[in-house]
Amino acid sequence: MKNKVYVLIIVSFCLLSFFMLFYINSSDMVPISNTSEELTEKQKIEDFEYMYNILKDNYAHFYEVKKMYGYDWLAYKEQFKEKIKKTKNNLEFYYALNDILLKLHDGHTHVLSPGYYKYLFGPLGFKPYEDMFRESESSYKMWEKIFKNTYRQGELEDYYSLKKRRENVVTDVIEPGKIAYLKIYSFLIDYHKDGEGYKKERDMIYDFLRNIKDYPYLVIDISDNEGGNREYWLNAIVAPLRNKLKEVKNLSVEKTYLIKGGEYIVNLLENYIPDLKNNTIDKFPMYDLLPAEVKENFMYYAITDIVKDFEKFSKYIEPVDFNGKIFLIVSRTTYSTANIFAEFCKETGFATVIGERTRKGDGGWLMPGLMRLPNSGLIVRFDGEMLINQDGTSYFETGTIPDIEIKMIPKNPFEKEEEIKQRVLKVIESLENI
Image (cartoon, rainbow, N blue to C red; front, side, top):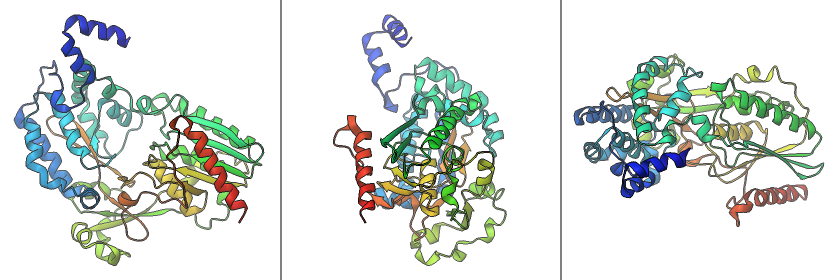
């Protein structure tokens, strides 16, 4: 199908035009869209100013970005405005906004593509933002048209289809009767199809776990997992293996967040944390450990349990009675919900985490911040809270630190999984010899 499209383009335009359409990625070189609903320069600047001001007062990671990368994002406002002014059409404006947000090195802060918009809005509901998504429905139809006219299919693809591999779950035996291996590339759930794919994967995982329940070792590999839905790992992995949690007296994984105090994010969080404004940062138990700049710029803190509803996911799933030892493999690629799983494993003792520190720039699991730009109707996602480690450091800076650190970069990229399995095997052998 794509080849036919390319042939039509070649017939219709000169070779140079084809080259530009196919290869360019820079927002400054995007072809002009064929829409009659072009935003004016004034409207674009208004949208940028709105986004900038919301982020200035509510975004949680300016301190870490400055510390980690030496980049003061807020100081570049005028340069950003000039970049916006130079955009010739809506499409260039869209990519310019994303380029500006990309400088924050934060995978959770970006403009929602039409495909991602549909994924979040559809069956997910994505409360408390339903009104915002409905308000942007007609705008995103316009954006769909723009991307279709310029053959930007990646922005239109359903987020699930774009991110999910065809073979998402891999099961194997490293050593018969002894070491079982389970790899999951993504925790995304296909809610648009009533979770059909996820349910098949969940059943596949359950059958595998039941078949290896007498093995002394199970290796779960999420080294390439960039996240998805918490329900996935709670339901498909932890619930059938919950024998490993029998000795955990209080199944609670409490995480602490700092909130700047901007009206936008505070109004949102107060719906879920009614006493938020009572939790002023000066009462924060680790207040003395915080850097001076954080003390000055944050007003509140919140503590929440990331597995408080575990029983909801586990009560209908029969445990497989696995009593062996579990190892969880992580790497610099591990991100978002996969990081939450790694933290769960560390804090409950469910698994020993091995590998490399997980990806930095993952700083908030409490509630995704979303704003709607008034003229373009685009929705911008951002982190409105800073996740704090038990020693007062920022999780955005550290990621998850494994219990056992091993190198994850393979000598031969084509033999990556086999190399990792052999390294894990050496870890197990060394532990057995202690």
